[in-house]
Length: 335
Image 1 (cartoon, rainbow, N blue to C red):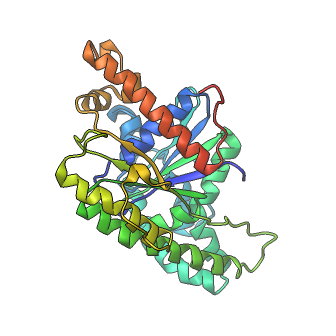
Image 2: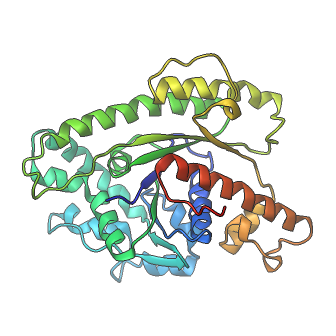
Image 3: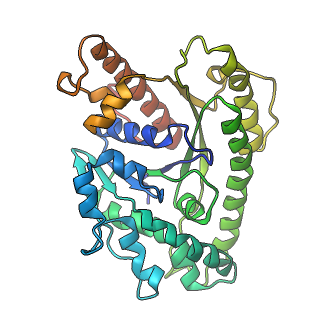
């Protein structure tokens, strides 16, 4: 499948990852690129960002057949069959969602048990580990997206491993603090190990003609620094220390390269961009269930806020272009 599948992944929570996926998805859709967003975080925060509570209640109704990624994989999890057809929630023009579900956490143990079974060439093990990838493929055949954006939870568990196996590229959101840096040190070696282990398992496929597997490239596309209440051109002193360490830690931990001389992220070719804090725009966007760059006066974005809305548009359009360049996604030439 030539459609790029891009996962946004960091095992440190609270860096603004889900908000980033949400806004990048909307930006690509606004630029005419059909987007399929996939919520593989058992907390389902991306789904909650896209949908209001009434629609969430309908999707998660236990008395009816739920319309989430968990319902799609339920037959496989229960041993009654293979994955079903994923529900595709239409969010807007060019933008669709495979909704998440808190029940997805029940898939963790099964994924953990089946991972070593793949090394023994067990067909069902491969079906389980590739369930997310196959669900994305089914949705893509029905939806024909230009790009798939995947949100995953902040951990190094089996669900995220299966999500990364399904992905072609990995974008790492960071914040300039000690905790995010420590998370990056854990994430990098784990990502490389998962890639190597999956490559070994693919070679053990018992029936390549009938069991199609993802390449599991998990290719690092770069990192983003999401700054909290910090100006892009003048980071406060408390953040400057961590900002200077990010490039070296990324190269050493994620790329397995020499860290090199200390530089700032804006000098690092592996840095996709620095995203500033948008202060009062974010709560407005959350209340309106709209991205910050599409806020209107009726949403409360009046006066000086309108200039900030325009600035957010420019920032996210630039970010979307840079991600496209690193992942092979066709991007409108006029922008």
